[in-house]
Length: 228
Image (cartoon, rainbow, N blue to C red):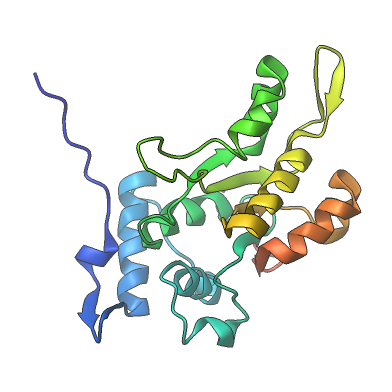
């Protein structure tokens, strides 16, 4: 028996029009498409909240690389996204859904920072290389490293491998910064940490690099837990 074909959602084919040499999207259609996908993925109870509309709009503008609108929202299309907000506000869910609006070659994998720290505990320093320098596809003549969204930055613990302590995500972010500067490869993050908490956990050097690497998009600090 042949394996079932996995159909990958594609808003470019399903809801976009093609005019003047580029894809055109309407925000209402994008919102409905995302909500429908959310229901298929997470269950019939899933919904998008009106208070998150502006944040969602900014994410979509960035993802589709709307060069006319992006500057109006202080979005640098060369940088990655740093999505912040309280626990349970929907950061991971939105990034997992919005990724389908990213164009081919710009789509990313969502990977838990906590899982990466556990990988380091078992496998050691090659894990840092895995998330910073390993090429996405060796079949290309000029393979490039994967684009990642590191999810829940800050929940991971400092790990040891054979007695050697390492702030794994801090090291990975520094390596990703080098990729950003040398090759223009972005990285995306979600976190519930504040800027001062990031500096306390990862140091001033990492925080300084992050200012150069990311567009900050933030949920309201009083956003409720949508899992309840």
